[in-house]
Image 1: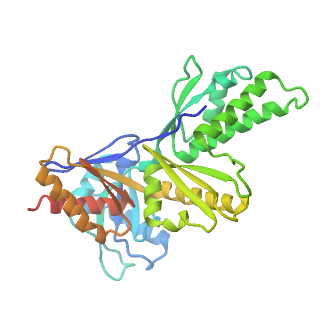
Image 2: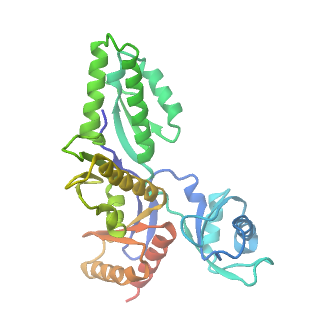
Length: 361
């Protein structure tokens, strides 16, 4: 029923002589937003600080304009997001070299670092849903409309003649849609427990098989403890493995992973005296952490494919030197590019400093 999701929108930087950024995917709000680092933390109430930031970025002397929204506090200490009414204001604000946050409620001016906002890297994955299994019970077009109302954060492609439909959105939203359809199938079978039709039996079998083979998230009995599986975005998995290794370490529980492109399947199973509850607890811990990171991490790809060999080596050398200055950033090197994963303000500062040092011989 489900085609394993593939990772969606990514943010790219290209490094020949100059650096440029190009985002794919949704553009509306993200292109009107900037990341503000250096916000004085703990001095005033959060709503007061948000008000001061609003005033600062509305002033013409700061190259500002009409502010639609200020998000503060955020998951990163001293960082705020400012969204403007017009995209042109973002370009203007970024051109100003020196932003000093000044207000009578502050004892002194505070320098701010303003950088572009990177769209959530993990915000979009794509799955192909086979709706033909429901054709004996529903008018498929009506069911699709119900799905759209149920999952307003997802984007749906056209319903194909063979019953397939492409669905795009976040991992959590797609999983919720999957659970909704499983409940839909279950409710159909419960209408007549005594005389279940063959079509209902086929539907239930198909859903259960897909659940095992593609999403692989159901419980599989295996001795006393059992085995459970979590499907993760590979970038999320790498970040968790690097910064939260203890999540994958538990007494009497074996945790293994298989990576296939943008998808990593993590298997949690009994390796000693663990019971089903302990296996489920470990699985839930991994899943909860992945969802939390899913909402805050960003990723930028720095490409130097067109660079000469010596320049590639210099970029990689600079990148290695910068790692210690950005302890919450994960850098994954490849032959023609590097991938930088972390909080928005961190990765923009990292790539900005990297470009500066790389272009300085």
